[in-house]
Image (cartoon, rainbow, N blue to C red; front, side, top):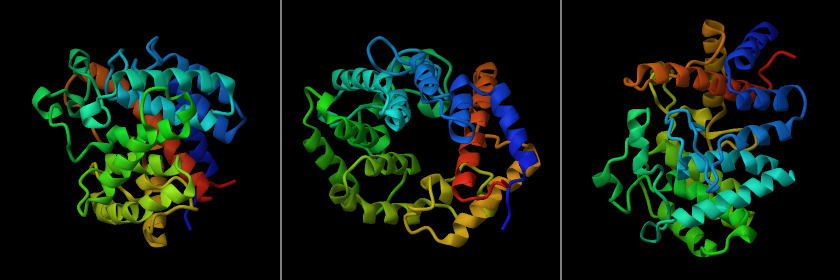
Length: 306
């Protein structure tokens, strides 16, 4: 079984600590060196606006300074890991207030980004298209609405206006009514929802998630240099693999190690094809983040040399 050598681990660490944002640096320190949860929370404060939502480039593929549901889903994803800290709860309350204020009743959720995203450098897939966005029910509804509903459920004591149970029922029925799944990103959001639910509710999603992941997870190594969902994109620990077989998981772990051997990091396999200067900055941020994510999953599967 291949393992990532200490030397290569240290090269990845060097990149993250020299090139990554403070957020990625502290995520690395917190997982591999010593607890620094308050540092991560303080880093996230830089991305939270006065309306409670998150923006300011927290999602590196769009530089919109204003709040968006998409960036807020990322902020809450991090904060929910450290909600034993009072400072995190204060920020979570503000984010929930923002989500309630921008909720779209006829959509039973949110659009990922506002139209103002077009006024700032961004990846083409985040471009706001008025005609497309006005299609209220679409096959990508769950990104990020399903994930956001999970946080509303988890922190429902801070929700004042929305019917959390009704939203959750809509989210579950929305995905369970499908036989064909088109967006891995929507399934990532449903996985986050799944993890925020008690067992009896999570059980209602489990079978559908496994079916979706079987359809979407690409197991053809020769295609992984393209932007395709790999098996480990759906998994963050060995205890929950959604039916993905052990061989596919080990092949994916080997792939991460091989890429680090080649480049001393994990480089994003996408580009904006526009806003060249801003993309180069975003590429550095993404490299630090996805390198950390690869190290995290390698560590979870005991694939880093001790």
